[in-house]
Amino acid sequence: MSHGRIRVLVLQGPNLNLLGTREPEIYGRATLDEIHAGIATRAAELDLEVDFFQSNHEGALIDRLHRRDFEVAIVNAGGLTHTSVSLRDALLGVERPFIEVHLSDPSTREPFRSVNFLADVALTSIVGQGARGYHLALERIAADRDAQRG
Image (tube, rainbow, N blue to C red):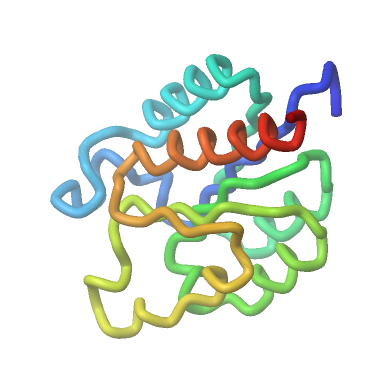
């Protein structure tokens, strides 16, 4: 840990680079860059370091996790949530806690989205809160840090 601050990796999966234009009735109008700017601001307020990574490629997401240069992750795996045993294995393999975030609530959507390979190994899942879900995840990380410090 540098300077005693928790390093948080925000890992964004496939198609999240299209936020703002992709199905705005589901995902809202904020772009990924705008969401990241809000996350960075909230992280600074909470004295957390934050790094962002988005890829449309499963292997790139896994490679990023393998760097292990973070203490905790916030993961929005997008569609890989419902398909990727490999991403699940990587999250378990790097031995770092993570919070799952989804802008929408996948369980209220198509039936295939009820399959979730990440929820049972995540610290918690925050769904259906839009971009605010990332802020809630940061607040959980900060609260856990503060509880550990006593």
